[in-house]
Length: 293
Image (cartoon, rainbow, N blue to C red; front, side):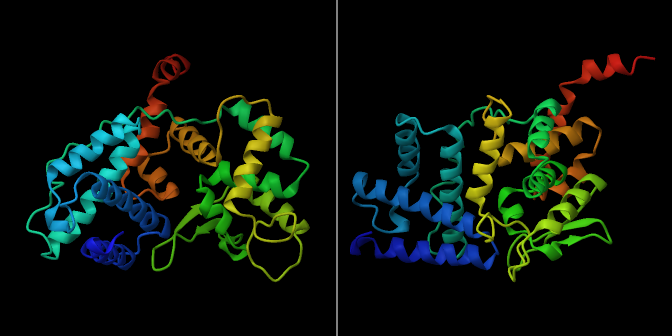
């Protein structure tokens, strides 16, 4: 940003520091920074008077959203960018830097219907069958499918995060934030033990290693999933997140309560978990027929 926008730059830095103080994840802080900088760049090009937060008006925000729509930015992305703008101005209003947020009352862009890709039992069983000869890969897929962890969480797992005595996996969320425990069933415990028996004996305590005996990265895990998806002849788009959706969807179909799913998945809001309950309800006719009296 130019010298003329020093006030904007300083207010942004203060806002981002406040997010870090609230223990927001590094990824969240980075996303907010990117979204707000993009908004500020647009302001520079389209409203030379907007040199300080208090000089930004509601019309600037609505026109920015219209600009994004013109360039076919999805409703989901526009809604996310508006959320960042709202929180930024909410912070400024709370700290008396502005009198009122110009984002107040701005309608959230309509989000496109999100089709969550997940695997059918025959599809994930094909992947498990292919991975069966590789203890590490098989254990990775079992952890994904039997616990529903995020790819970032799986990459960060350490050997001592697996409590075999209590049969739980402990997920570390981040510095200063509460983690969660996920109960482990026998098949995933067996897969992890088999992998540990062949895991290289190195000083790094990260659970899953790559072929260079270094901690496997999120990128490495994503490439692994794609490789097995292709080998299994699955044509649908499948990612690490799809395995998380598969876990949640199958558990919901089997009657697991949304509260238990929320605990396992680590969702902050129950509303996020409810989508899996709705997916399970789509099979209502089939369930009714199978349980006919």
